[in-house]
Length: 305
Ligand code: 13P
Ligand code: SF4
Image 1 (cartoon, rainbow, N blue to C red):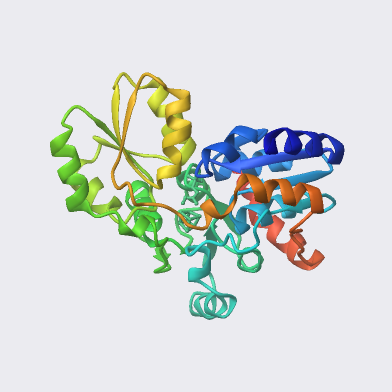
Image 2: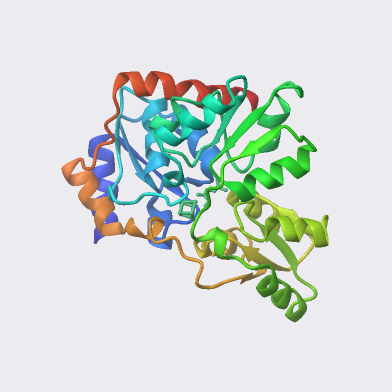
């Protein structure tokens, strides 16, 4: 069976399998560790194995490589990209920086490695507020590339001097406030957990600040376990439903949109994980200059939160 073959190869290669919370269930089940972007970066910085098979999207595997330049980092499908990471390129970033020469540049972890080389700090959905709060208040900030996350940070920190890049994730941007409102009316006893990349984040905070919890993917899993509620409306990619249910089997999870599926995350299959380990493909290859420069904002983030 494929699963046994993978486990055998994993041992032979001295490999570790890291997987994001949106991966398909069978991939999550063979992973050594499943988590959100922050947890995966932390895990990647502590890895002992020779090979890391990263089941997620490319910017995540790149982060693992940046933190482990001497290890072999593999992604089972090189086309597993991210529409949000692709919403800004180097030329656009350099032009934006030249218009704000004194600004501190903070990038979301959902950025390609070349973009990170031009940034001062990195952040994820679970530590963005803490990273921004670590920057002196009088410093102008350029935040990129997610506008909904950026607007949430701006509201939560009360900072006016944050400029936000108008990028978005094609999956999360599609969540509409009106649809969520309908789900909430149908399920008045449910708690709402929302990812800050969602297009309806600002409206939700305006209308029900306090009643909607804005959380990273692993933040949702922890919150559901600890909460007194038994029913949750989940406003993010549907892959999260599997680890939510696994961690809290007695609770009910209702997707705000059952069609919110990241096609990039779903490109990683068990078959491709097997081939990745067997043929040691596809290796993440970054120049030493990119690794050195991109590691600065990532390491600063890991020190802060
Ligand atoms: P998390 O860090 O919350 O897991 O989010 C990653 C992501 O790509 C969300 O679309
Ligand atoms: Fe990127 Fe959106 Fe997919 Fe997350 S859900 S990996 S932000 S395209």
